[in-house]
Image (cartoon, rainbow, N blue to C red; front, side, top):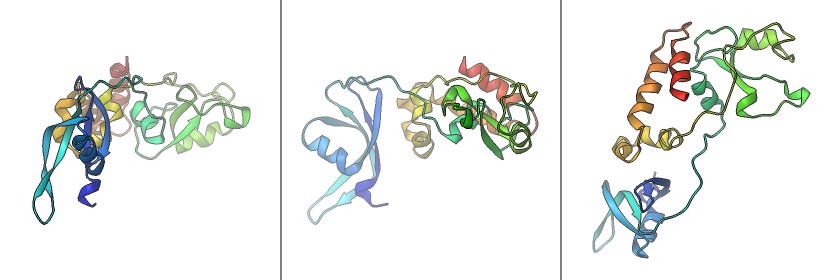
Length: 199
């Protein structure tokens, strides 16, 4: 990755994380007086005459109003919400599929409330039916997870541990994900910890 594309965390005026931009955009915000450096990075961009430290974290000098964070719907996030556990048999696995509780062919929506993690045998057994028709019971009704800044920015926090102090709840999120990853195969322990954390 070129240095001008290095990631930079952008904080709001109140130090709440806003987004992640590249170093080029960060330099523009700094040069125009719209942001200030909170934390310098370890690398520098060098010209013939001088070196410019690439910031790791910048803060906007004015407040930007924005909506509350929302959890992004993806396979990985559905699996994480369900603790990498099949929602029909309770088997803990990394080899899961997504299942639409109300099948797509019956106009079942592709939403948090209609998607669950399922192992391949359970998904095959359920086929294009509802759980009631297949005589299968869900362990827990699917729902939209509560999103925090730490969950929304988690992939960035993993790559840049120095950003953790700017994310309230990052340590809790780290511990929660470690618990899920450490749960033994076949146990519902990860699911129980995720369910408790989501409430």
